Length: 111
Image (cartoon, rainbow, N blue to C red):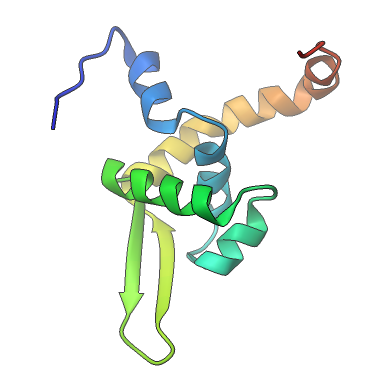
């Protein structure tokens, strides 16, 4: 696996949480571990395929922990690691900024 180098801390942070879904998944896992179905319902609009892909990437990045319970029926829960919780904490001010400026952002013309 190729080692990444970054220009600054923001570059590194955006690489880890880049895209539409990862921040929303982090936020959904903020309070408690969730099973896959619960997580999918919590992240409105995400497809099952995309959620699986994003969770795998987040697990590889060390943001999310996947716990498999060997029982019948099988049970899998996803939770934040300490690394994931620290990123979630860093995203709180960004979410507050978004709330404060949501009307302005929604009014921006999009293609």
